[in-house]
Amino acid sequence: METKHKKSSVVWLQLTAGQGPKECGWVIAQLSRVLLDEAYRENLSAEIVESLAFDKLLRNQTLIEPDAFLSILIRLEGKGVDGFAHKWQGTIKWQGESPYRPKHKRINWFVGIATLSMPSNSMKTFNELVKEVDMETMRSKGPGGQHVNKTNSAVRITHRTTGLKVRVESDRSQHRNKQIALERLQLLLANQNDLENKSLERSRWSQHYEVQRGKPIRTFYGRDFNE
Image (tube, rainbow, N blue to C red; front, side):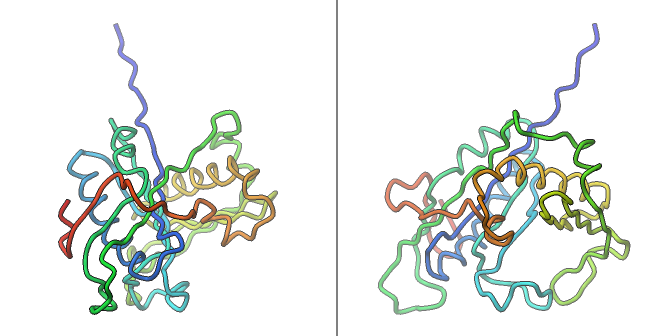
């Protein structure tokens, strides 16, 4: 009897500093590394697909690696990914001295992690989306102008009907980046009713919310982020 191969589940997590100060953006940067390391230990595929620097001057540039982020979007895939994501979803607390204001009295900093949903009843297939987008390829660049790949592995797609644009360069494979870009577009289109008439930059991060203090789902301490 032939056993059907079950397709791996995919979850998108958005880490956000909410309305917090830059310290919360710094926590987001550290927390993303902790989350990725934990995902790898559980044999999950994990990658940062999009990030938005906390400091506006550090956005849309590749020379300096930001030390704080307003948001980071992570794609997770693999067996047990739903349970993994559940352990992270909610308010996260970090207790430690401010990396920017050493004499600051505040030691408790709160950030949030939310799952981006993709309603199945409004989801378009990849084949449908491919017919609706213009696709460009280009070289990927990392901080300091270093090329992630010497080939044109980065992908940018534009949805002709809505004007939504998605750029992905998280993988060395152009084919893989195309797949992730189409997934990201699926998410945006599936949730476009909630985006109303906001600009693209705001709509990409529409899941920002006021991070709820108290009753954090997980708590980390110190510069080493021990739980």
